[in-house]
Image 1 (tube, rainbow, N blue to C red):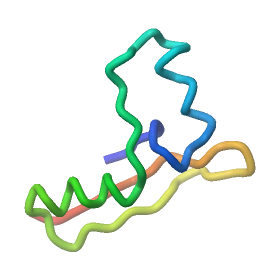
Image 2 (image 1 turned 180 degrees about the horizontal axis):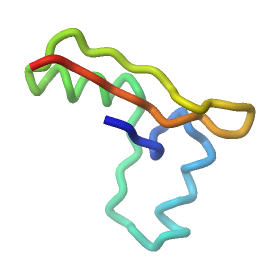
Image 3 (image 1 turned 90 degrees about the horizontal axis):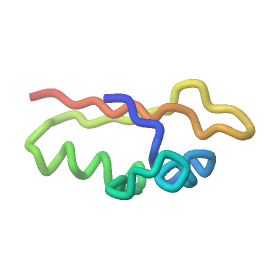
Image 4 (image 1 turned 30 degrees about the vertical axis):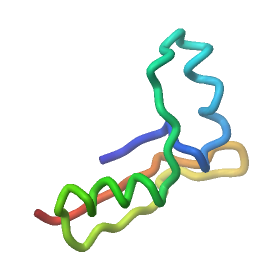
Length: 65
């Protein structure tokens, strides 16, 4: 899964207000990995694609069922 709205990606923190979507929940990379593990997935890994000085990158989380 790829996600751009996560705690470590500071550039995305204003999105709920900018987009008027108040139900968005900000979770850390560690929490996202924990969600996958809690769902029963194995070999859970994460990395960031496209990270640069201002953009935290797209957080990619994978797991095996």
